[in-house]
Length: 351
Length: 118
Image (cartoon, rainbow over all chains, first blue to last red; front, side, top):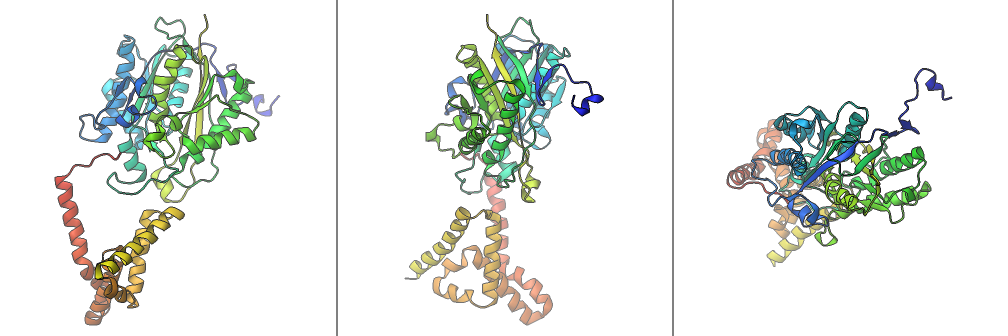
């Protein structure tokens, strides 16, 4: 027996080193996605519940608009399945802004018990992971998991003023304007969509020394690879056990790099791999390496992916959102970019 | 002919900056500082004025021209007022440019609202 277990009793619901098994499976009751206008013109435009025509959405500032998106996407997800706001026992979510103000301010408006999480662009997966634990553990029966990002807030915070006429590098990705929310309920609840969360994999922070804030995809690829391989090793599964392995926002270069890194570790992702950032915009939109931000994986999951699961196109997907854990200060001080990837497994209940 | 020289020299200075942006990882902010500093050095050595004589606005409008004004202002005031002038002269020499940037920036901020970038 492993030495550390002399004092610590191994948890019964964990396999391998990083993966949780939800025997008491949380299931998806409802979901919603709100996206900006460019995202609406993109690949999954028809799948979003709402597409904004003006990214200020009638507010004075973009920060307020992002918070409104966060708030409205939760309301929308609840309304779609006639769920009462009072039934939500916890709101779990975050965004990219300093001190996650978009989520905090939305939680104030919603008046729900709130756990704020920050995992940069991995936030959607992180909130689903925390939500699943709360439900599976029998602590809660209905939770809302959400994440948002907004181009006009993130660009100003992380990169440069909107008016500055700098050109984007080919490796740059555009922060997605959008918010997504998944409502999870306990097993046996009436409003289930027949999609359950079976596993969760908590990612390690990986840093291969990339310092270029305009090349986040390459920075995040090793973290994505690490979590994919850890998940497969922990569960004893192979790529063939999944219909789709989804990463959050690695973009064109990052997703290609992830394929290569996985192959080096003996994992061939084949044609079962989709990156939300790489696919959210069309080639004609010329968004360089693609989309990024918490909202990127959040809107794709809560529109296209879960809908395709409901229509039986996919029966089991590994949803793995990747986050670059940098700050403006760390970038300016020349620090490299630590990254993380958290995963959850969605499975369609058979029969 | 003056216009052509102004176009060529001004354009050349911008092309160098663009190449630096494309081929190196130097940030735009650092390139701005580099240009001002190069302008100060060339101005201080009296070389930049020869470029101004040749290309006019092509040499004075880019940021190196601002550096040249800083150096010339400091040297001129140092000659008149000694060491104190070396400190005040730079600001005096570039006061028109600095004040114009603030005034027009302020006016633009009053008139226009920021918009998102597509």
